[in-house]
Image (cartoon, rainbow, N blue to C red; front, side):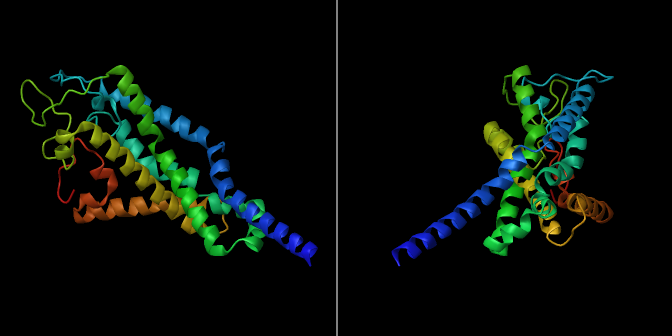
Length: 259
């Protein structure tokens, strides 16, 4: 009786250990994936376009007070890299975090996992891992631009949000983030990173959710892209630009209702 009990405890412990190891594996494999090379290339191209278009103007503009925000994605009015960044954000998030479940299925490991782990737990683990990986992928270009900006211009002078002969605003006074920017610029920076991380994580989870119902490889990556384009088109047709993140994440000039 004692011997049988010992065997039972050993098997139970081994099963629990297996489930615990599987819960960690999607994150570990996700962070070690070759796909981050694609994110790195996209980041370089976005930032090259951003800095090429932001500081080579054919006309002379008043110079704002030194502020590293002017060198960051989403804050520079003239940089075209922000536009590309926002358009490819769903792809970056879904490409890294959206295939957690489908990768396990296509590798053949999912069947073994399902014999030891309830399906709802597998779904929750996949969604959580996808959210974290997608969020990290989504903020990568933004964080790299932050590092470059702080190195290039380590200043945080306040810039008024009104255009005049002596000042070109960094963030328009009508922008929905101007109140936060005026109150505390560090707070705005932290909220921006959190905002984009959560948005990208949710985009990745859209892809993960689609992967529960399809066996076609990488089809889930298209889901958040299609959803974004659909919302963008709807917002343009009905003049409700605040519904589309591509418009309301242009912090400098995001001043149209209902932003």
